[in-house]
Length: 119
Image (cartoon, rainbow, N blue to C red; front, side, top):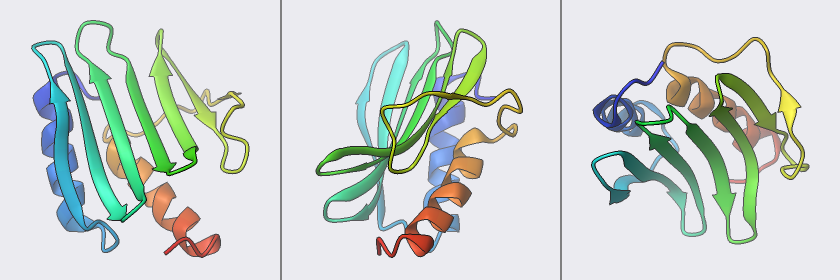
């Protein structure tokens, strides 16, 4: 699990080179306690990751011009999912995520992109 801002930045940097559909990586905002970063997929499609080192909150989202398409969030010690096509809903995911949640999320995004012909 991500413990520090640097952990997320390192995992994002690795993911930007690992996944064929990622066109760019940038840190949008960083403070001493939080970071927001984007992994660009296309002109109006990207993955956003937000992490708060104090609360350990991690939010991962596939975002287009119309808003969040899919997401996974870790808040208050539990994971939930925002399903593709129903991103306003919360589905508990007691199975959680792997030790590299951004990498697992990017694998899920790859499947969504292909199945839904988004790229």
